[in-house]
Image 1 (spheres, rainbow, N blue to C red):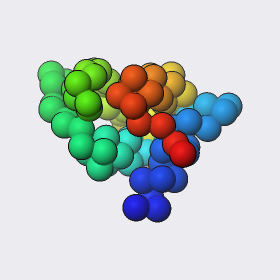
Image 2 (cartoon, rainbow, N blue to C red):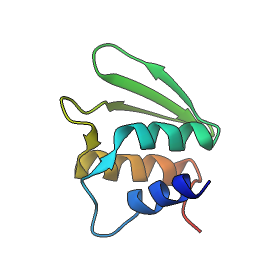
Image 3 (tube, one colour):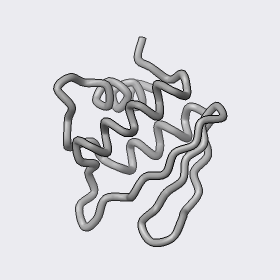
Length: 84
């Protein structure tokens, strides 16, 4: 549980962090009841609380960049998942 809280805090950190592990973001979405589906290439589709989003899995690195983290933050906010 503490791991997911840390990832959520990292996603909502200001200024935006550009070193959040992508696998941790996927795990956070799943932990909150979201679904993940592989798309073409590096695309990953998420659905959480009726909100849908498509992201590109980072490669060759394993960490999401600042723009991706900002998009994930918007997705989570729209889905009603925010830090306490």
